[in-house]
Image (cartoon, rainbow, N blue to C red; front, top):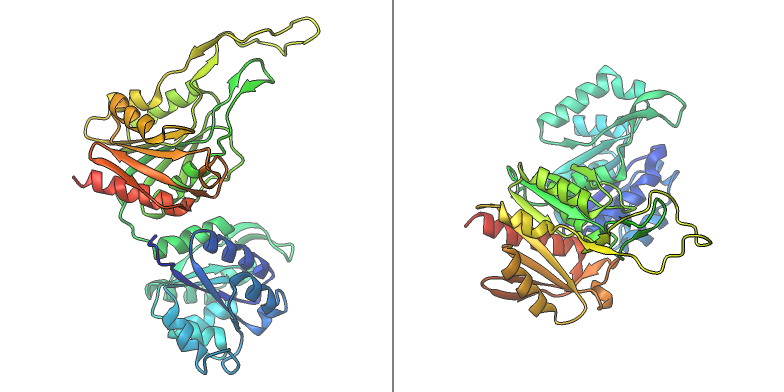
Length: 397
């Protein structure tokens, strides 16, 4: 995503899932978007406009006649938006969109939009499956309107079936896909993320402070930009990004085996995981008891070098490594680049608060054979896109 924020118009309709629109708004903001809201009168019965004003930091358009700063809010918002997201899209609003009816602020604004529109339906199963709704959906699809969901499950009314609003992450992913370039179409990208856990016994392990946030952001961004993405993840509490195939591992050995196996079908590998350099040489097969099995020392053995082994078999493919350091950052990164054979090393000083493990920002430098490029501190999604743009330049060479 570019440095200039993308503009997303969130059109909130009067369904029981209207509260989920707040989470969609937050997800879009987290991805770097500026969001403004229009909503129907029925939507205000579920979530007040004040809530969306507080979350978005902008006035909410509920009427054509009293929008602050503009006498024609439907035109102003339609021209401002880079994309519009309708959530939860009721059967009524879907029908109005299909027929070109503009009888309130929300539908009038949507009719004026020339930007891409994403519809996230949420309604009763029988309403969704009705011939009228399906005809309206087909008409909108033919005009280029995108849809996400609905899912199947237990609905608010107690019925079970299709009509449930798609997941928040799925809606945000679909919206970002409308906004961003699909410049990774046709590429298979392999990413690893998170820490590894090296067993001392069945309940104790050696680990590090990695949360996996950076690698997950890279996987999400690559999928959003059209790549086929496989994420090999160590133990984390993070949800799988939409559009990403996830392979869970625990130890460095498991991550090594998974990465080398998945690399056979990959065009690009991005190694952001904080893999343990050492693992206990002889982990116990039972929980060690302090009272009778005093542990004076743990014998360690080196783990396999995932980055070096990938580089040894990469051929013309692109391999990116990370160097998380606390001192002599660029010297360590340049040494890693030379000795591992990677195309790019992403170097970050984890002793800095803005780029430490678990932070929502990162300040990195790109180290290549051609030199060093220092980036400013950015949100993780911005760093992820910058890494992918660097990868694209290498793939295109």
